[in-house]
Structure formats: C-alpha cells, structure tokens
Amino acid sequence: MKKRKLRELMDKPGIIVAPGVCDAIGARLVEKVGFDVCYMTGNGAVASMMGKPDIGVATMTEMVQRAHNLAACINIPLISDADNGYGGLNNVKRTVEEFEAAGVSAIHIEDQASPKKCGAMEGLKLVSIEEMSEKIRIAVKARKDPDFLIIARSDSRKVLGFEESLRRARAFAEAGADVVYVEMLESREEILKLTTSVDAPVLYDMLEMSTENIYSNQELQDLGVKIVIYCLSTTLYAANKVKEMLEVLKQTGTTRSLFEEMMPLHDYEKVIGLTEENNIRQLLG
Image (cartoon, rainbow, N blue to C red; front, side, top):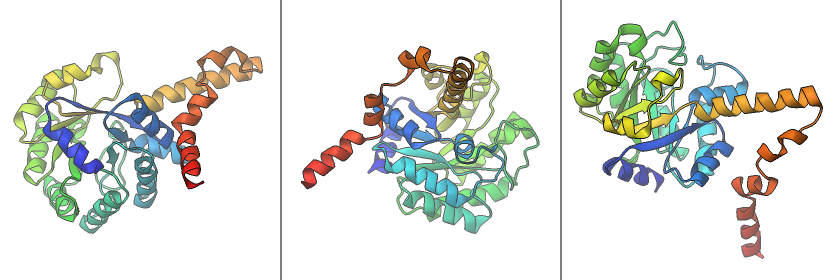
C-alpha cells in the first residue's frame, strides 16, 4: 500500500519532499507534521546506532532492522539508504529482498566499492560503470513488487568529475533504475543538466554544507528534480540543540531556563503513539 502511494506520487506533477531521519521518533514527526514521504539517512542511522562515522561499519542486517523500525511506525512511504548493496550481485539481490520485506518503499544503491564511505568524505573508491549497471539490473529483477523503487546513486562527482557522473547516471537509467541520484552536485547548472540529460526522474540530496548550496523545494522543482531528500538536516539540527541543552545543564545545574523550548510531555506521548495504544486497549476491553 505504501509502495503504491510512493509510485502514485512519482506519477503526479510536483516535487516529492522527504525529510531525512535517523530514528523512529523522527519518522513519527515527519508524518505528524504532514509530509508525504520519509527518508532514512544511512549516515545518521549509523551515528545514532553506534556513534561512529558512515564508513561501512554497519551490516545489512542492522540497517534493515533500523529501516523496519521506522517503516513500521508510520503510514507514509519510507525511502532508505542501502549503501552499495553490501557486496556483490548476490548481496544486492538479498539487500532488495530484505528491505522490501521490511516494509520500505524504495532504496538507493551507490556505485562505491567496499568498504564504502559517506559521499561527502575524501578518498572514495568506485566500482566500474559496468559492475554498477549490473547491480541495478539485479536489483530491479529481485524486487517482488514493481512499485518498490530502485534508486541508482553515483558518488562519482567528487572523484571523476561531472561529465563522468552524468555518463554513469545515463547508464544506470538504461539499466532500469526508477530514479537516478548523483551525490555532491556543485551548482544549479549541474542539477539542470542532469535532469534534462537523463531519461529517468532525478533525486537530489539537500546536504547543508554552506548557505550557497541550500535551494528551496520550489527552486529544485523548477530545475526538474522529482525527489529531494533532506538527508542529515534533522540529525544535525537535533545534535546541535541537544549539545546546547547539555551545556546549559552542565553550566547552570538546571534545565529551568529551557523548559519553554521543550516539547510538552503529553505532546511527546502523542508523537510516540501513547494515545493509539490506549485506544487499542479500550477496543480489547
């Protein structure tokens, strides 16, 4: 049902906005605020689970379990980071099967070699365009529901330049990817050239590294982008606010001055579904 909803959104005019989250509370909030789609960030999920950087240390099983937890607590589609498919062609097949069974509506698979890194890091190593294209073909064939979206991501922009990333995006679209995604694009001109040169919808990753590269949803839609994910926005914002709160507690010995900034306890209980649980108990008598 949720996969069908995402496919229907893909077929409608307008951009799909998917805020990124690292945990189930974040996913609940995305739905509560009124967004139609949620995104699970790989970087944020690894940091939340392990307190470690996104350098290939999380296993497929750990990421699928985290994605399942997020997908199970919301009624909107979840797009998830699936790294590089966690290995070779057989691994990619199993990755698709497991994420789909977990209730996820779409995954993106990248063209990095193992061990992979966050796309913003230095020293990225890529697989060949031929190997990645075969991964996409396997991923498309492995899904049970045709509404489960396979998103092909390329991290080649920083390593090999824009023209090569464009060539890869075209090849991945030809291999059957439902959506293409080039990480670390550097200008509006590159975004527009990608959207007008590839025969597939384009996903854009809004990674706030400077104010100059922050575009509005309308600007991205005007450039031809179909999906925008705010990969680390909530994670970075929450981490900063928690740090500030802890500094105040350390310095003053109290949270009194922060009370008005906190979510009221009963509002928090509603976010995590306490009212829903009470209603179930009443129905059961």
